[in-house]
Image (cartoon, rainbow, N blue to C red):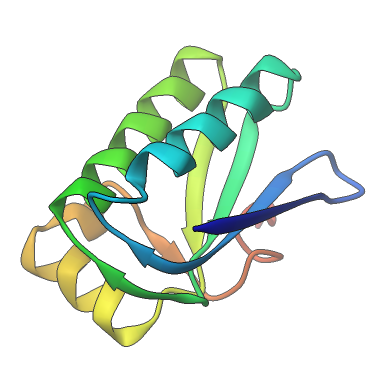
Amino acid sequence: MEITKRVTADGVAVLLPVGKLNMVHAHRLREVVDSVLADGQNRIVVDLSSVDFLDSSGLGALIGCLKAARQANGDLRIAAATEQVKLVLQLTNLDRVLTPYASAESAYVIE
């Protein structure tokens, strides 16, 4: 799984995984988030617009990454989830923990 990273002007790390976030690739997301946190960036958005499949391992990776970000006094948010990803989040009620935002840019907007 390819995961690209960019940092916004506000210091938010935006990660864009491409492909399937499943048992085979979940560890890669954890590695990238751990690296981002080690670099001192504790506000993270995972842009899921290019993730076409999410399974329980992918969910576990997202929850583990959320926990790691919060332990670093930050947060992890998800954005631009595809319909398949939204459905999995709703069926597992994890959309209450990982609220999907419309875009990476809107995930940390202060209202």
